Structures are given as structure tokens and as C-alpha cells.
Picture 1 (cartoon, one colour):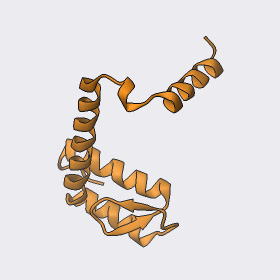
Picture 2 (cartoon, rainbow, N blue to C red; picture 1 turned 180 degrees about the vertical axis):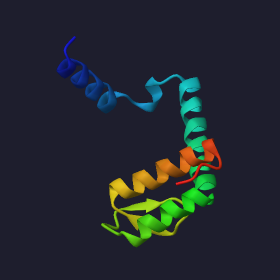
Picture 3 (tube, one colour; picture 1 turned 90 degrees about the horizontal axis):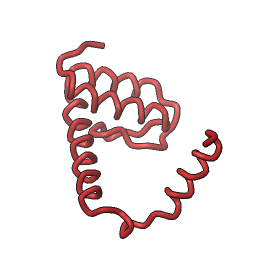
Length: 98
């Protein structure tokens, strides 16, 4: 299967799949993972390195499109994604420094 065909099939699956099509256990797993990730973002946003990243994002604004978790601020899509992902991983690795 070509990459183009694989991308087309994935796109069709994404567009056409309804919640009722999914296994209830899979939905539960996704909900649990989403909550775990959000909890990690909250925890990491209050750790030293997370606070430094939030300060960087606030001091270097380039948009107000997307919320930055637990910071009462918004940033461009890429900066908010960077900060939120950093927060989630920061909570997993603990006291890492930036």
C-alpha cells in the first residue's frame, strides 16, 4: 500500500467513524489517557521548568489562538502546543531543568 493510499484510508476512517462504531473499552481507555495527560499538564505547569516555559511563552507572544494550560493565557497554536506538551512530559520526568 502506498503512503498516499494509507493516508486516504486513515482520513476516511477518521471522517466516517462514529462513537457507536468503537469498542466501549477502547473509548474508556482513550478517556483515561486524556485525563492522565491533562493531569500531567496541570502538574507540570507548576514545576520549576514548566513555570520557566510558561514565562517564555508569555514574554514572547505571537498569537492568542490557543489556551496554555493552567496559565490563564493564550498563545499561537505552536507555542501553546509546545508549552502544554512540555508540561505533560515535565510531570513524568520530574525535576529536569531547562
